[in-house]
Amino acid sequence: MTSIGHSLSTRLLHWAMAFIIISMLCLGSSMIQSLDTWQMEAVKLHKSFGIVALILVIVRLFNKLISKSPPLPNDLPKWQKFAAHVTHFSLYALMLAMPISGWLMQSADGREVSLFNLITLPQLIHADIKMYSLFREIHGYVASLFFLILFMHIGAALYHGLVRRDGVLSSMTSGK
Image 1 (cartoon, rainbow, N blue to C red):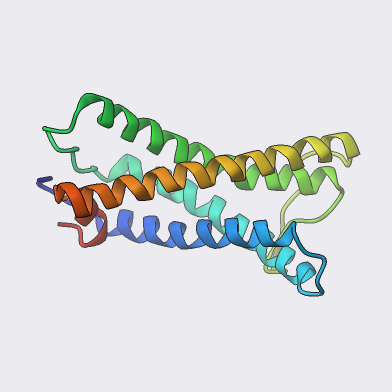
Image 2 (cartoon, helix red, strand yellow):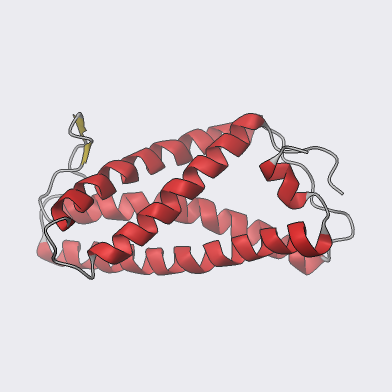
C-alpha cells in the first residue's frame, strides 16, 4: 500500500486534464472524419481547449516540482516501475507536443489560434504549405501515440485498483 496520496492540487489538475485530453482526442478524431456544418465551431473549440491544455500542463509541471508524489509499492517488479516512469514521462511529453504541434500547424497554415476569441496567440512560424503538412502529420501521429499511452495508463490504473488493490489508484482518486 502507498502511504501517502497525491496532493489535492495534483489530483484536480490530473482529472481536469484527463477530461480535457480525452475530449480533445475524441473531438479531434471526429473532426477529421467530417465536413458537417458543426466542424468549424468544433475547430474553434478544439483550438481554445488546446490552449487551456497547454496552460494546464505547464501549471502541472510546476505543481510536480512542489508536490511530493507517493512512492510506488515496494513489491512492484522493477520492470513495472520502469514502465510507470516511462509512461508518465511520455504523457507529459505528449501533453506538451500535442498543443504545440497544433499551434505550429495552424501557424503554418496562416490561421489564428485564439482562446475563446479573447486572446489571440502569436504566429509561431510563417505560413508554409510544406510545414503545414509536416505539422499536420506530426499532430496526427502524436494523437495516435497519445491514445496508446492513455490506454496503457488507464489499464495500469485499473490493474492497481482492481487486481493489486495496492493504493496506487486511490492515491489519485481520494488522496489516500
